[in-house]
Image 1 (cartoon, rainbow, N blue to C red):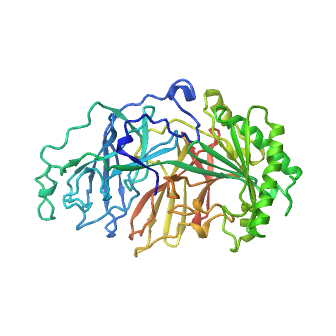
Image 2 (tube, rainbow, N blue to C red):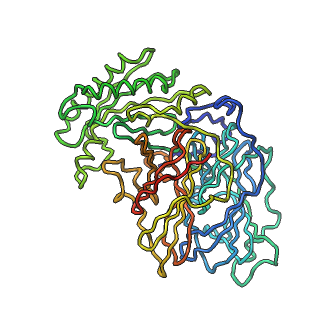
Length: 528
């Protein structure tokens, strides 16, 4: 089961794990000078073509008309209309509605009941479907867990139209009143639309005692030739690749490896939370050899690295050493890239709780670390303001009748949002190859290679760092890519989608995009 929060817990204060920034408390303490002014300019509206399960991928207008934080929960009010109309029962194939605090990396989803039905606007037939009429606006509301008090803006995903950044949170004593005379059940058929100018509204159902909602953290992965960093909640793990660490079947560090560990020690000293100064050193092997032999080898390698860390780092740190043998591979062995995969699996990891950051820390975090340890740098900006215009395309490519247009990357908290458009230039519907396992970097981590745009990565040519599409981790192995899914493209149609990556340093103004089968598109601007 994924991590879920029951309604009875919603009124509790949320301290929560913080991601990437390692920040907590009031925003003005984090970056100095206070946050940018948050103004309410509802409605926030996006328009574009969305994927429907019937293939009637028509234009949709999606407007967030309110985001209210009460003492018990968060209520999102929104409206949907289809200017071009469509017929019959259709389901939007977007990802679930999700609110993301892009500064801390926390994510919240809607409340459901025990039968899996959403709280809020009630489906007239109880099947999750709603009547839709040409040119008629439908009004909805949905319930989410109460957002922490310090969260002032969120990014919304799940409309099917990409990311809607900079949505302000409204603190209210009471949410809007329920619709007085919901007319949705009165207009269920296509030949019975409401009178001109009248919206469709539905009965409202507030969360009951059985209400649960998924909560998670955005997990990011940054890679280089010698190291990678994964961040999930307030836990950070630096993995040093063994091809620069040990000779085959040895546990003594090479000279090059000693330099790498010393660099890692400096990163640990800057990032480990002084209130939780525990560092876990974990050794791993590849799949060759017996389980018993690999277990012993992984423990000895971890002990060697721990001993050097203790020499390098002053302070009251505690160390725990673990050997996990070949039990936790991060790359699939036995395929065409077997040697690279085995090399990635032979590794030593440092796992620890990240420290809180102040203004001075943030300035230091934007300084690149030599030797590939820049994977551990954390780069946090303010949330991006709302925009319904991605600007002009920065790069384009074509593959098998599909044109890919890439727009400038936009900084949003600890991430950058990559917006792309896909156009089917043929006369037939088709499902494009967007990458995935077949497009992953040899020996790369499995979980970051799945999903619609999982084959995409951002490349930083000067440092050699590779940034993978972020994942939303809801616990117990439940991951969702922080990107819209790519479905069947109808002929002549253009679709806008997003993929979200961990942000580079503030001095980085351009990145290359490795776009799966579309190849590498160079010099994509980074804005914000």
